[in-house]
Length: 290
Image (tube, rainbow, N blue to C red; front, side, top):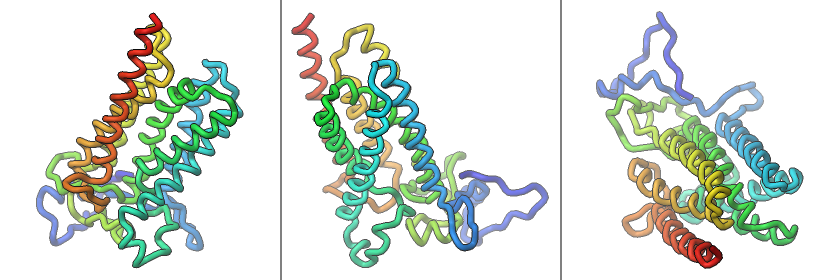
């Protein structure tokens, strides 16, 4: 997390820093939250756990309003988490298979990142649909509750990316640029050290937080305007895909390419297209029932 140098202590300068980089050198990230010597507590893992718990809290609160049992919500969220982590890691393995082929042990770590978000999202969505069907729960209604909780969890989890150094941005001269200095972050994620970068992790976090707010407003509007179940979920897919496509232009980490687009940009556009069709179909159904 960002920290500032202590007052009265000389600030160490790196010989290759430009004046713009030196202005941001004090904003350092710490991939290790606590080092006990015999065991280390990674900041990424702590924030990932916090994101899960906060999202579970919000989803539980929303579910109670809809009369859905808390046990079902907890079980569903844990199931989605496990499926999402596996799906995200498998997708990361596919898009960066050369690196993992050279170092298979790194596949099991969560240092670099939990994986590719879209891979985890698809795996979690499919698993959730199967879970809801098995327990005879309304798919559309529950998915509408999942959407804002998922966005809130993303907002917190992205600060874990910031601490670890993954998902780093392009070189920048903006006043809010960040500088990474921990050699372990560079070794594991490849993030450049002593260079001012766009804080893309913060951009993604703020974007997710704003999406959470919009989705909560849509949930309220759903009751007043009688939106069909599933509309809020597909709004999340559309808005996230569109905003993620734009934010990807500021990233500079290796993450796979499909033609001129990054993997996430391609999947984001795919999500926008699918969500647009789904929203259109739901809107027509709503008009036909009025």
